[in-house]
Length: 145
Image (cartoon, rainbow, N blue to C red):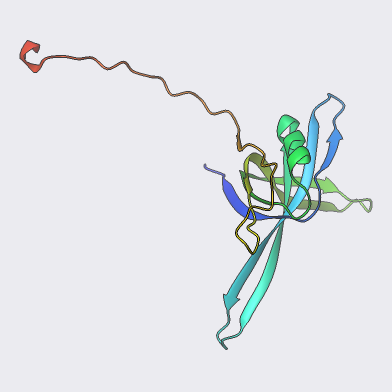
């Protein structure tokens, strides 16, 4: 199965970093996506959708260094369901985005100048390398069949 989601949105708060007992950094933040559509009656309706995002290690640290509440970013990751029991013993769950890659999206000001000057690098998780096959130069007259 294929589990991939890509969202362009705005951070609703600064990333919150914490360390696990094994020393892995985990960052949590939310991203909002605005949806605007026209109803059957002709009026425009705006609705915001909020998504929880989890980032790990260097990815989480990079986001903490370059992004803050209000930053626009393009994220890609996998949907992951988290489950737990609340203090009353009831089972709870939610779906979060396990971040794999992100990209900074500049906002343009009224005079079309970029408002962000410290643009972070685009980050993509390491991908497997494709094996390279060398090209062979063969004269078609030399092929025996």
